Length: 440
Image (tube, rainbow, N blue to C red; front, top):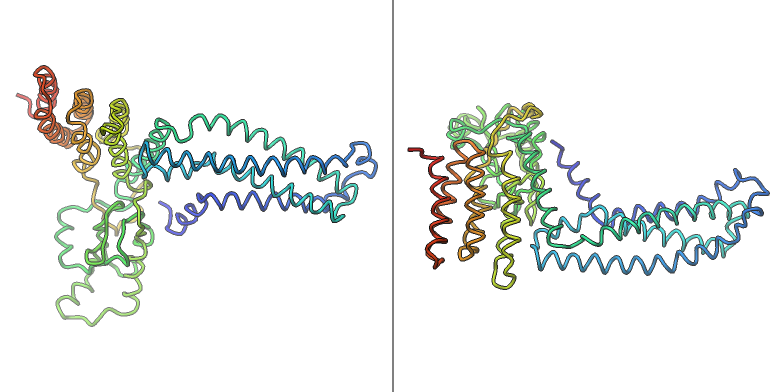
């Protein structure tokens, strides 16, 4: 698990302007440092190579890179709009964080600034003949980088913002979140069982500092605070939970807090207050949910994509069927409940975390599709077959969740369909699921 400050640095690095600014600084530095490398160039080499051509090269780069950068920005905005309108606004973030697009724009902007600074320096007499030669060599290298980047950009443009590509991004982000959670089922802590849930009633509640979604939990900080308090911390709000300032996000259970509740001890001292504040700050509360520690968010976004696809305005049952196929791939490793041999050991033994509820995960994904696609036989039969596959792959809890979702889907679809044979096919798949759960 990474710390909260490390995560914030990663989020800053994902911002487009950060990468563009870095390439811009490199471009400016390359143009100015040519003078420092000039003494290493033989005196007669600039005359043989003809370094005077560098001025024309820089002029071409400056004019072309400005146009290419503007065009690329317009393409990027169009892809955001396409993802928002045709897929889901929640998926736009993944398109915005696409590293290829960010690198392309950063290279184009950095090349433009490199050429611009080079032209200004040439016109002011900043370079000697050998300095102009170094600038010429660097310019040739920049042209090579631009050509390679443009080839990648042309290939990337054929997929950027497309429905299938955006759904694949959501699937990959969800798969990573599920893989991380399988490796750390309790985020590095221990399982919150029924015995500890009873202890919540006598613990000290930790309230969030603001209203929003829990995006990330810094388990190491909570463990450190728990050691300072010689206590256990029971996490009440997993990533993805909507938190408000009247509901605890964690409970601190220790002998000192229990004694204070009984009126035996005095008020918490400054050290205890500081530790409780440290626990509060370990919960990152944001305005939007995040994919990183929240597998349910990815499943909910996939369901939203499928629901939009089966709406009367779009009427694309194929996309919904595609999403259901991806759902089986995503949930198969989870429902099998096979031990992950690469799973991390418990690194935060004083922190107790509830497990993800399989019923809620199934509900996040299948319930919206069952509701909005109730009239479409192709979607409903694929939904029930997906649940059947997960029931066959999963353990007892997964089979129970599949049966409950299948029953709800059947209750929605049967009244909405007119043809008896379609209802019979749906009922037959449902019976297969029921036989897995309650064999006769």
